[in-house]
Length: 112
Image (cartoon, rainbow, N blue to C red):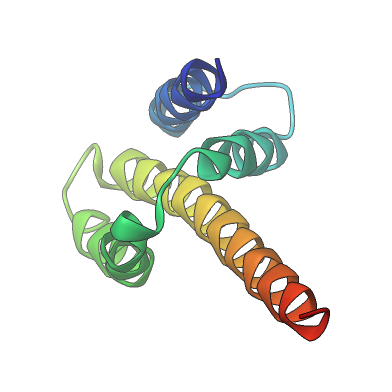
């Protein structure tokens, strides 16, 4: 069940990131993307941590590069910025879960 919820959050976040790059939406899109990214990050495993970390570092550079494309560059740059926000929120969630698990293991080890 959790896998379906996090997958749905990831799909909605990426769809919203794409649509918000081209259409003005009357809500705080970044906040919605962050919440969806946090939910999506719960289901992400530690095995994709490096890939997502690289994506967070590279997406702003890609956004700056595609901004130079005439006619659609601004919109494509907005899309990459939105996707970067989603991936960053998921990465923060993964780090928080990892820290929680490490702390739990350390505290459990004290009782032995």
